[in-house]
Image: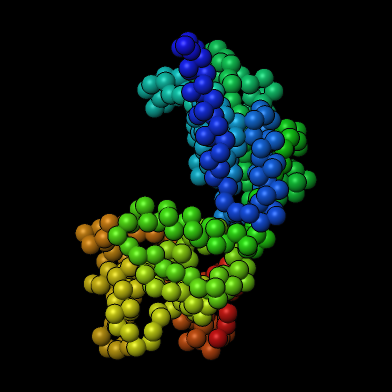
Length: 376
């Protein structure tokens, strides 16, 4: 008969095996298989890892997978260095004692302490201020921290993973990133490939994303991508990477719920927002129901009835009619429509279209590149 210690050991071993088997990394392309092999080697170690790659490739997913492979008992704590003002980032990381500064009415634990026994994920490390970089380097040298306003050090057991979309080597040369910190963090540099470099993984990614979408909205029928549609998706350059693919799939759920998506549908209706079926009022209604409020859709075909677009205030009642909204996708779609409309109205002249939109010409050109908009 097994002792309690033996039972606990067996249970822990099974949990570790389950964590090791439940990989978050989706894809079987050569690049992904190579990365999976590397993660199996790097994961169980304590070495810092630097994840690089374009925006939207899913560096946060790789950080989660490294934490899984590490089998550490503590949590994965993430913080986006670009999303927090520089003057607040230090207190978020190190925490502070009561009375350390004005407004510190109680002691607060920082992200370093929270990740003790686990993994700390510093996203967008390239945006960390230089003064804070030197303090991070000291932490990596002795794994000890001191809260702001505190007078004693705490020993930590943590694993550090960081990520950035910036070229850190160039930042080091320009003096915007400490060289000694970079070499300390880049013990294991891992570049996450862009989606266009692993386009064979698109079917698997769509399958996984579809399951996630159906978990959130189980009463919706999934679209079916034909072989030609998959070819069209693989041919796209994907400047927005996996994040852009997710947006395209959500658009397909709106436009082609329960229907087959063809190659032309991908090109004309998903990669560039266009309502399928020019004579189908039902589909037009479905698109606008998903994208905007019926009450604020203006009829611009009659210039006498409407001379201005819907006022921002008109969207205040959105959640009286809908449960949620993908704000980034919605704003991006509106941008695409307005830029294309301005270019068409100004005969394809970028400078005139920029003036009509209240933008600089160079800003409009960058937006056109980012959103894959061509002059008519």
